[in-house]
Image (cartoon, rainbow, N blue to C red; front, side, top):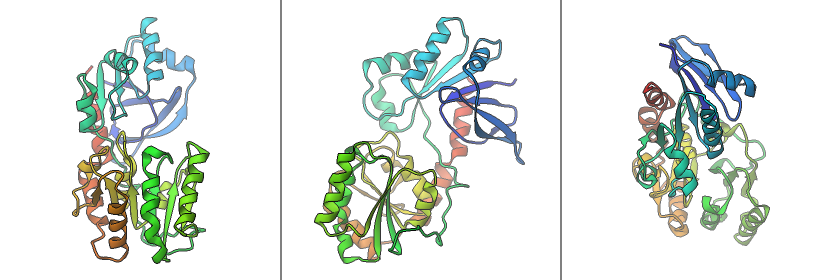
Length: 328
């Protein structure tokens, strides 16, 4: 039997050839193309709202996978009008959900969580399916260099630039760069508040490292930054999952991440696959950076990639999702 899946979020993974999939953020739907191993590759495209409705109100067996409250509300409205489909919702936040979010999630036929703490904190039945990395795309490239970066060695921080992501802690630890002139810190991501960026720049001037710290707006070419980096730091105080950490590991970066935040402690065995420190502990982070820059402790990029390839691939995530979708 063929199924038609509508996934209200951008997603990319391989699927069984017998599967028909539509994927959408609002009305952003994915096309399918066959590849050698009889799986299906998904590329972004768009359909109209009328096309979306024609699918939902047809006789096809349909599974709708939502990732945001507004998407769930929209689908519940269509269901109220008579559309028949199975509704799956993914919870992305680690915190206890609001009353509204919990109410909406209870309306779903299945709820997905991404990490153990999220699953425990949710308070309703859920299925744990972790994010996966496209390991065939997120690959190491030791020869990669970044334009406009003068130094040969790069420490990378990627993701939203906001207080919860820990960049203040990172820049306090980054004063160690002052004595390591051939190392740079590159912070890549969308800035939520311009005043926070100015605060970060002030810290670089205080520590006299402003010529070694680079701020880069969010980019579609994040893989190049992973490939150019020797070390990636994830100093977050909270995370839904922390896909950046997994992607960096897939690119053979040595990752330093906060303990018990998001999926960090599940991905990283401290000292064997990467390094962990307590959130907010800038001196501990500074010491780890110093030891890695001076090669006093091991760079663990190869071990990190092996962990991702074996246990955290997008293929594995896809297989788990498909099994859930089939529970019609």
